[in-house]
Image (cartoon, rainbow, N blue to C red):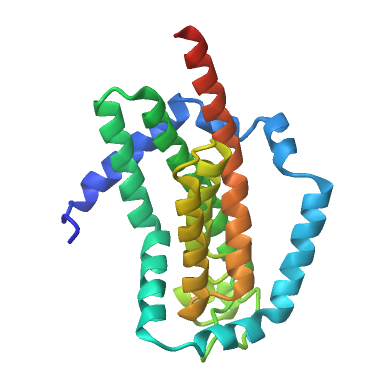
Length: 244
């Protein structure tokens, strides 16, 4: 059972984390062109666009297969995946990790947790901007056939949850965490986080909350947003080792 923490306390902690992210240089890492060139190439862009087009074409077929799977085992898995990818849960866990490490004066570990939060924050902002830009109907009975660009002024529903399907925020959060662990060579942790990320991707489609293309795009965004802070963390860690 989760401890009922007052919402204003969470806002204060989150604001402090954003300030620490800025102070530690993680925000500036996203403006590092050399870092961005390493993770984004012409081949990567072409492949991503091709895969996204394929997913959009296969969306209905894939979701029809997944939602037809029944059984308590799959429902439990989907519940776990949805909970893990929830931004509030992930933020709470990794923010706690940062404060524990900082209190214990474990500088590199605290900076690692700070990097995960930086990746999640930027991925979350990017996803939210794209959601209100594309305004895609979720795969539900009344919205599945309504398509894309369902802009508020032209729809009675406005920017409601039903019309903010693309891309998946849960997938972006989960893959930002797993990619950050992978890029920072956290060998014991990244395989576990990667499994959880794919579990989240499965869960979002299985429960009918997202199209497969939503999840794929969220995963790409999360992965890309993890690279700059991961590079920054490795540089800081290397400089710290040289000083010691």
